[in-house]
Length: 277
Image (tube, rainbow, N blue to C red; front, top):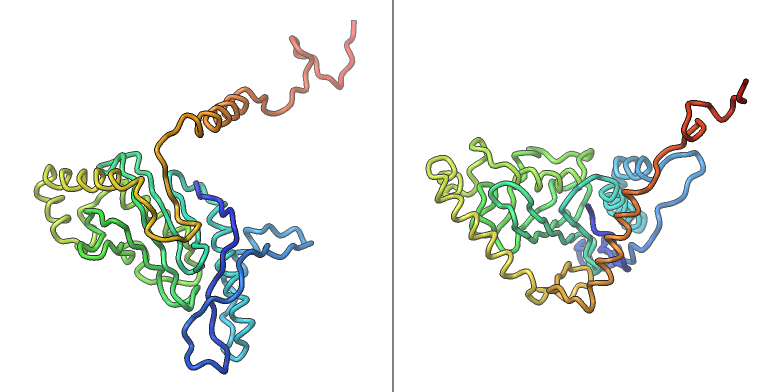
């Protein structure tokens, strides 16, 4: 499940001809709707087509910035259509190239962990290689660098192509935490060695990462970005009403009658066929 973006966020873009260099700066807002269409094309199909279109030339810089905004928005729109459970991702309110994420692990060695991570899109996205995923704090895992917490993505994406999607990268995060494999690249040599030779020691260190993630769950945010995902302890005065609404909605959904009946109640008589004696 993906967190729904609830407020305005801005993106960075290419500087104009008169600027000193081509570094990126804040440029406009991504609070735009994908353009409507009248030919029956879905937003998901339109998002895919928009991302896969050939890159524009640098001669039309303003158009390139505008198109890049829509490409990133299209990626996020596509992500919301996927059935990604227990993982939440949302673009930063201040920089659309930075996305915040939280993953709730419900199975495997890391069960119970609540792991924060960031996804950083390359400045030339959708070109420029695979987005970078960094876990904060670091997690003891064969595919996470011990010093930086950066996830190795080459195991699933040896080459990032234009038809790869950010939601596939998020799906990859779920995959590598759900099941550890000995054939994983040795990004963290200690983790991979312990997993292969001393599973008890590996599990102990992995569980320490789970404990650390939970101990920092309610810490003040590391940024003032309004889209940073935060948590607060359960407060009955604030949360009981929300809990009741959720349970009520779930109960109504379970009791909802699905489909239509075309027979008379208590019989096999079709509605459209008159009874005969």
